[in-house]
Length: 162
Image (cartoon, rainbow, N blue to C red; front, side, top):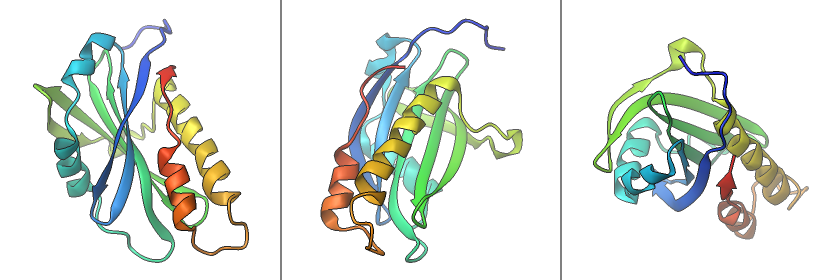
């Protein structure tokens, strides 16, 4: 069980992962900043994200989203979020183990009802604001966002302490 003691955590962006015709912004979130060196590489992340996320399913699925890999005090967590329709976010949470820059023992937490912790929510809030700023307000009459809008979204990332 976690304590009722809030300590800021380091959040940093990593390169976008492209898999199954999707693009995911990737964030590392670290309870211990020394664990930055443990973060998996892009290929390792693409393998696991690709196994969990299929190709976009239709015109309402933008093929865009973000992933948060949280190396927390009580374990490691992988959160996958993808944008669908104009303004909806699909979200999945997994418990995992990050060891020697590899992801192992990935298991869904769907049955727990857990969505995110307070540190992850700060990144999710940033992503919500980035989606509104770059996609929803960029081309108000467009049905599909333009390439420039997509690039603006993918380049808008959070770095800092949460």
